[in-house]
Amino acid sequence: MAENQSAQRKDEWMPLTEHLGELRKRIIYCLIVFVLGLVGGLFGSQRLFDYLIEAAPVKNLDLHAFSPWDAIGLYMKFAFLISFIAAIPFAMFQLWLFVKPALGEKEQKATLVFVPWAFAMFLVGLMFSYFVVFPMAFLFTEKVTFNLGLEQTYGVMQYFSFLFNILLPISLLFEFPLVILFLSRIGILSPELLVRMRKIAWFILIIIGVTVTPPDVVSDLLVAVPLVLLYEISVFLSKPGKSAK
Image 1 (tube, rainbow, N blue to C red):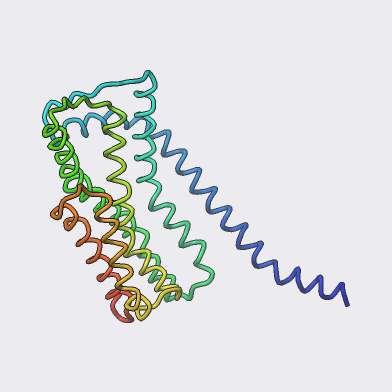
Image 2 (image 1 turned 180 degrees about the horizontal axis):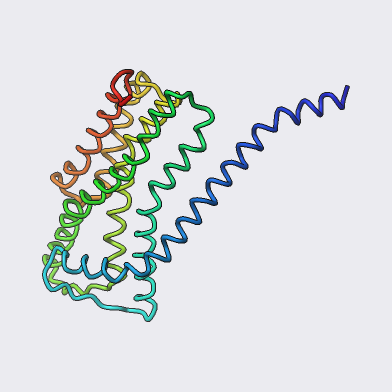
């Protein structure tokens, strides 16, 4: 009797161990691609650095290294950013492969479309945060420094840390609608639940918008309003018959 119960428990746990093994395999694949992208990103770091300096919100931006490690750390930051962007579509595809066995044929086709859209939405968020939010945040800090009668000296690591701390969070937030749609397609979320959560979601998104922008109403609205609109679009598209077949 005990042997039968032990065998039964083993059979019940087999699917879980298989899922964990599959998840581990997908994560390893993603890490391999990320490391390869990191190596390739080191070769593109110089060009990206030159572009960001030329496109800075102020002309003749004079940056300083305050540590012998600043240049090396900067190369790694740029390589990480390049690798991260390049790995997004592959990671999304691996996620789709992981959940694919649990989906029907129609659901598989409906969710596969999220892979290229995830990359596209990240790029949209990246451009929005760099060309809209970052200049406002940077010029705001410049104005405060000037009003205090201080002379601004830019450290290269401090400048790009400030830049990346704005770019990456906002770019990832632009993935929010796709995450909602994906969870809706696999049955974890429903349009009714999203509607009930609307007020809480709005509050959280507004708090995020206020947190990542300078403390003025215009900047807050320029970030919070698009995030709320993205949520409403995701709610609309999650309804049956609204998404791409």
